[in-house]
Amino acid sequence: IGMCRLHNEDEVILCPAEGFFAVSDGMGGLINGGLTSEIIAGFVPGLMTGIMFEAASKTDIGAKAALLEEMARELSDGIFAMGNQNGATEYVATFSGVWLVEDKAVFVNVGDSRGYMLSKAGVLRQVTVDHNEAQNMVALGHFSKAEASLHYTSAILTRYMGMAAPVTVDIFVEEIKPYDKVLVCSDGLSGMLNDDEIRDLLAEPLYQED
Image 1: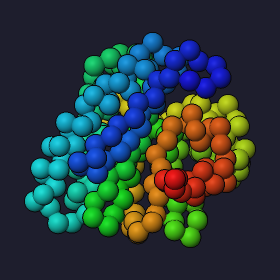
Image 2: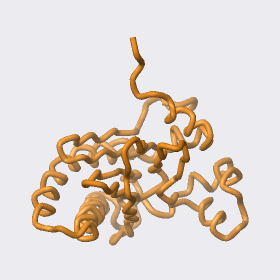
Image 3: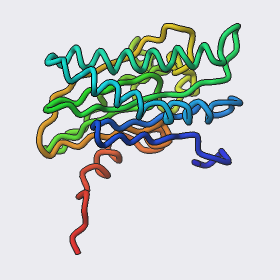
């Protein structure tokens, strides 16, 4: 729950049969932020089952990635239609996930939850791009990444699940190799630890020997 909230509004989404793993973070302070992440977590497993059925007839990774993009967009637009029309902003959450397809890791992202990859050589790379005002300042050269993480504008999302339709969904297709590690997390982790600390944690063995 961190240091200032009474409950955790993050939801972990695990679809091992489909090779899909994600996190959704309800926007704190909004009446239905936590409910939004619960809605996303409830719908995604069934939607991924449908995607797997459609993907079976497609050989191109771009076509498969497009299915994931469409899923996230339709889910966000549905949340908007459910409760955020007419100027309301009550149902808001982030969504960041990774779909492991053969030798590819397909990342999907809306908001400021993140996807990372750690190579066998120990090089950590943030794959996704934060959708907040602070990141816009980084892109303009006004902030460093470290400065952006401490600035109040890092809490102002420019894209989120439930925003006015149609939402723009980011998709990143990455090659994944043996011994690579993948992390998806909310800002409850990335906002508290810097990249070096995240790298060191990911570099630890997955299993401890007896």
